[in-house]
Length: 500
Image (cartoon, rainbow, N blue to C red; front, side):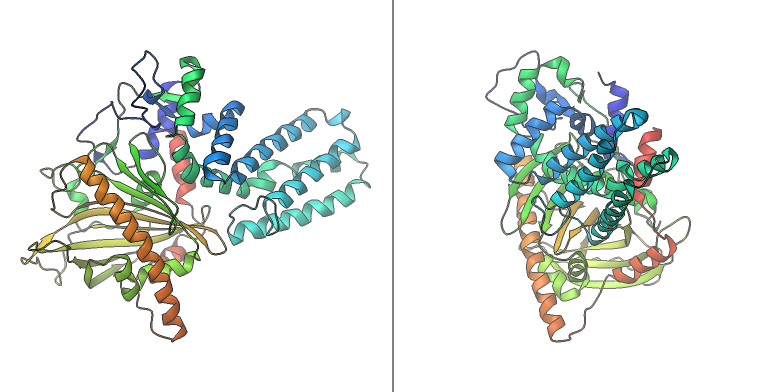
């Protein structure tokens, strides 16, 4: 059985960061990762009152079997989980050989080599039967490992000294050979398929059948509620620059939690899932009414760097955000040990509602590259700068917002974009139903607009037209990469969670 303390570290903490973001409605009736089956009568055991822990769930073979069945029947994308299972088998085989070094035959060692090569051939090559979505760095690394393993296998027959054999065995350890592959597989499952699966009727029925004792080994009981502290304080919207905590915040919100409700999932024109929080949160001014966060996860058949260019270019960006009509840039801030490289400015929007005033947002924005994830993370938020060029626009209504865009490189012409946002545009949305409808419409327009933006970018390049990076994101990204060489905020966040 897993203790609540352990699970809080591994599950609820995925929505925690050094930023405070205080819940204005800690309702426990809706706090679940699993789809609520309204037709079921209330019983003493309800799987909806538990939040599944990904790590514990994936350690259970029976759980992985039902997950695989779901992927085969509903997603047609079982390659990541199949690879996960094969890696587990390889680890068990390797551990068995290590435990019985003196009793192993030459054939058992050769089997290790063969299994490594089989996994690489099955999942990591362009011609693979179950080819994974891997970025170029991971592909290059695994091809080098394949070459090393192939050469070591040839040398194995000539090795007689036990010490040399032990050194070779260390080179066959799973973390050395498959570390990048395992990371890619877990990210693919955790960010894409798993959030849908834990809300499925198939899992609900499986857990209902297995019972309370079983679910307590893989999940956290949240029937009495759970704590999420996520408030941006008023001083966070002053001219304070963006820091590491803002990147940790974005990475945390990219993951799943009991508070995210899946409100839409579609495959055309691109695979897109839309989530909203069940709980309302307060940001900015203490008197501001609580609102909900929105998140979308979209997989695009475009190169990641191409998508970033389209997002930065002024003309292309208007296809993504049709309400945007004006940008003013102020000053920039160099990176330091205390802060990230940032750009300051203000952005104006025209809302598609008659008689409403224009909206504007004074902002600070940054962009970093996480080397372990091969992910570009962009974080903009409201910021009231103490700058001579900044004036209050009385003919407009100020917006307060915080957002994050995470561009994951999945390989050649494949990018997963996770975009979350919390925006108070001072427009009443009314009920939760209306809010969900607005979130779905926003996601639809965003994904279709991004597709049009990439096409426009390609046309501009063919005509040798200028690409206008109006947010100056590329130089900001370059400055952060130079100052924070080979840095991974994702690894740092994981280490912080382990120390909790």
